[in-house]
Amino acid sequence: MPQTMTSADLRIRNQVRLLRAVHDAAEPFTRAEAARLLGIGRNTAAALVGELERARLLHEVPAEPSGRGRPTTLLVPHPEGPVAFAVDFREDSWTLASVELGGAATELETAEHDRTPGVFAEIREAVARHGTARVAQIGFATPGPIRDGHRLHISHLGWDEVELDGLLGEGWPPTVIDNDARLAGLAESRRGALRGVGTALHFHIDFDIGGTLLLGGDAQRGAHRIAGEFGHMPLTGSDLECMCGVRGCWSLDVGANALVRRFGAEPGYGTGRELARAILRRAEDGDAEAASAVNDNAAALGKGLGALANALDPEAISLSGLGVDLIRLRGGLIEEHCREALMAFRRDEPPRIVPGTVGAAGPLTGAAEIAWDAILDPVRVKNRL
Image 1 (cartoon, rainbow, N blue to C red):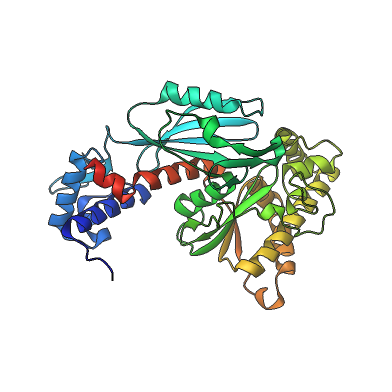
Image 2: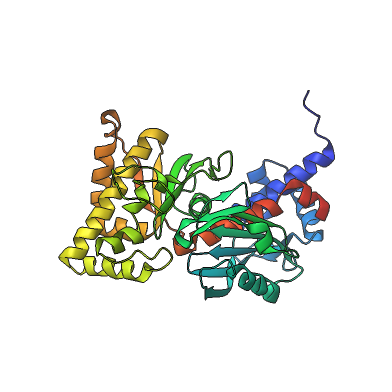
């Protein structure tokens, strides 16, 4: 039988709901607006705000004057409250940021690395340099699947079954880790182009392509937390062998590696991003060979999106990374090939294909989101009160 919720349980539930509302809001709101959002009385809202202020989780600041009447206040993060650190670990670089309740981020440090697991020592040192007692959680984005939450695979770097626990070492704040493409999708769902969309797909295109299925604003992870490796499905008929061990992966036809390979250069697997961007610029300037390579990339992207739309029926599909450039340069071509790949009865209502609005910060923003999800766990909130 379900347990009866006590008054203390209800209070914690409402405190978490209020903190979540402040975190998710596009801009600060008042105590009265909080009462309406949560469907509670104003006196209850005032009591919740007071408790959370004493716990150094929320703070009230005067709003800009808007005419006569009693001045109002806005709910904002407490200046002495917890913060999350977010790490975006790329194949060739990393970035560390501090993120407050509400999502405001401050970049602390960024650097290139030598593409060996020794990079984690550099990141540990950066966390130690910038860390304070306020750091409650770290969110970590990586460019590859993380099996069971701790075994990292990055085929571009030749990493297989790399144990993250040992690399991160002891003494870290609590840490949550996820795939960069999934986190970019989470960022779009929470703070970008997919906000409010019930069923959506997001694809992050960098050296290759990865993605995530989003249901009700949450990125789906699968039984072993490695769902979303859409780039390793044979969607476009390629017969090339992928470094992941599979032949014909969609990733071989979409992204920076595919552009570089099209020009007869070594893809680099962890290098070559600038060459790919140069090819995009040449295509935009009218270079025929570059334009053909971009056309191939866009056509393969659209074909794969159509196949996945047949299976998953998204309302909208967003793209980040190089995907934004591909939409800008070849949006019509992407839509054409997507529609051709759709089952005939679906073609009258194809999913919307839109550029992400969070931008290059998508994986970092998503890493911050999963860190704050952990901080706003009811047990942790209760322990702070």
